[in-house]
Length: 289
Image: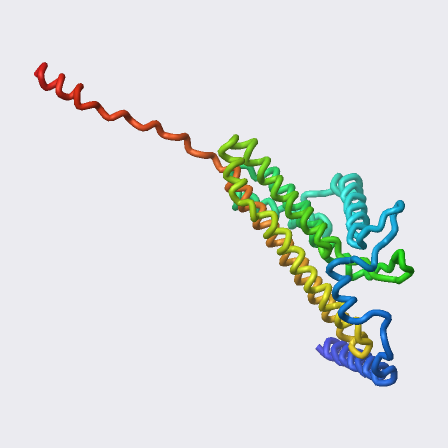
């Protein structure tokens, strides 16, 4: 008990000392003298990316595209390494890595079985892949990787889905998965049932874009003022990023599995209407009697 109390005391002393140093630095540096861009320009470029672009093969592309390429490459390499070196060594008594992997797989598989019990295999794999991409691509902005724009300005690469194009790609891709599953499973009736929800890709895309963009803009606003750029960005940036990563991963996986389950649910066959006997046949029967 004494060792624990001493450890807590040392931790609090170090923590308060760091806070004191940061506050002293804030007061010594004082207010910012000026910025190359106004806060309005920073916010506008965070949404539209019409100023800070990157030259790639003679084309001016959004920074979000570079983030998407980097994140996709990292995830593919990590998946290949996991499959080649880690999964063959899994045992009946799981270690830490095996426990994490199995917990993630079971979480998304359980969500797929609960929402689409008829064909859970494919949608479970899809929402697992989409969820991992959304989660880690959202955390990507915490690394603050700096790149130079074609105007010579240094910027940090944003989260891929903080770009409207990345969010639209994710929403439309998920909708196409549901649509194709409806056609393959239930034919034209299943596909037409999915086509009725034409607003689904728009809602999924803007749900992702709006949530991640709000965190990006709040963080940019905090970073813009150097008086608050010593303590608050750490708390605000990590809080918004982790919160959005978890929530948006869960929301998209839930929506896709739910609508996928509706699309692949077996449709009852149409019942043929029984023909009512005509009056002439009834009258003929009465005459015979």
